[in-house]
Image 1 (cartoon, rainbow, N blue to C red):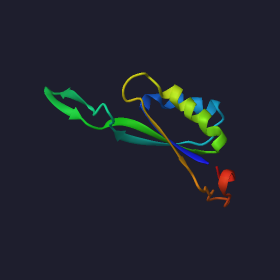
Image 2: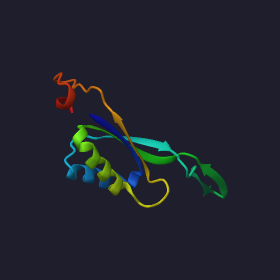
Image 3: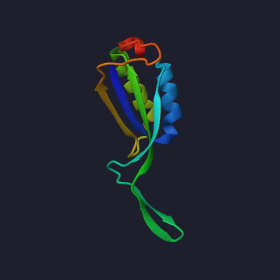
Length: 112
């Protein structure tokens, strides 16, 4: 099993969700996040005063799925989240050793 963590721009969430549903993915966790990467935030003007916005709004997606679906899910996220501008986000993939469904006690692939 794999865990995919994707950090994307908030306005791309619906497109990413639809792309993941098209490749057959059922479950997804969405977390509102703030952060910055290479762009290091930006400056804004508020009531005549300039200030730095260090942490930009982002959305973090977490998905646990079978190994055979990982490549399709990664590509779906990449294509749907891409704007071509700095700050489009990142995708991280890690291995999951075990999953347990709390309600039934199912484990492994059956739990996801």
